[in-house]
Length: 103
Image (cartoon, rainbow, N blue to C red; front, side):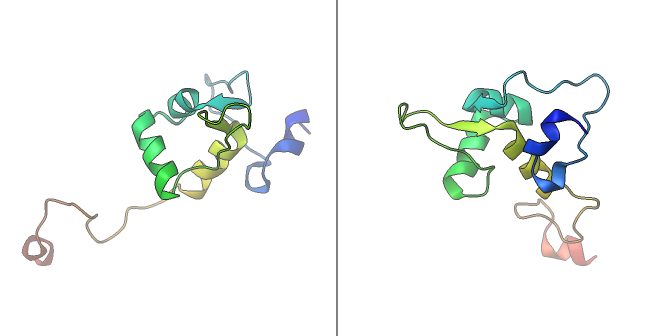
């Protein structure tokens, strides 16, 4: 068993990265690093944090302005939100009208 496996959340105990990708060297990431790791803008990560739909985070006592993320929490969040198929109904904000969807 890998030495890091004991730190992984249960849903990630057999996680392997695709060939060519590497784990970050540090398990504790800043907001910018976390957004880069998730391949999304910092503004989207912040928005998800504010509305409570994003990955787990913490605010260090000695840096009240800072936000930090654990790599394992980011991976767990991604695993919880992955899909195997698209929803049948159009997403909110879709350009299709109800009449087009019924046709």
